[in-house]
Length: 248
Image (tube, rainbow, N blue to C red; front, side):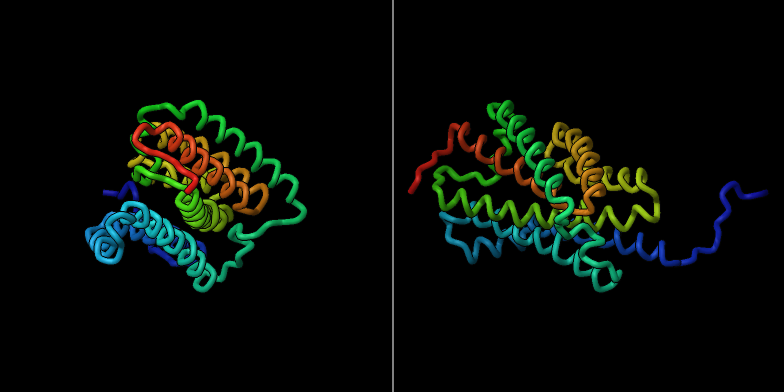
């Protein structure tokens, strides 16, 4: 009886190697990051080395810097060393010729992100999750430290999703399949944050992929994500009944 789907000999050509490198790196680095920051080992180390009063704050901040390492530095290094990709070919650049478009698009998306977060600032479901760091008393120093850690984390995040997981796949699969693969994986990692963020990440993921490929840079994606995260943090902090802010 003839096989409907005959198995052909598998050849690890250059394209297959790139796909394995990109997808393998993405999955390994994200899974390692996610399970480590939620692991008992990480929590015990934080309990040991951090003061009790600062533990809730710095455990999440340290987790974000670890995210920058695992999602940004390591994937970028692997593709640079093993895959022989240049930084520019992975979107790690800022073109002077595209500067006006990059800045304008970033500001437009930033204003849109701030507007969306302002309208949903009193949403109870959002306040159950944000601010992500659940401490009662905030001051300028903690706000700045939290915002900077968001910046590093999101830079690593965009290096992975809009750099490593996007640019190398376009020549192999084509524009639309590469964006589809990127968006599917990007939306899947939002599932723990609920249905709303998961569905929202689909549209946002497509838009950011298109803008990233148009400019050849992750700059717009990073700035848009940073506006989204910081404005949501500030609005939710302002609205949260159990949190206070003082300048000192």
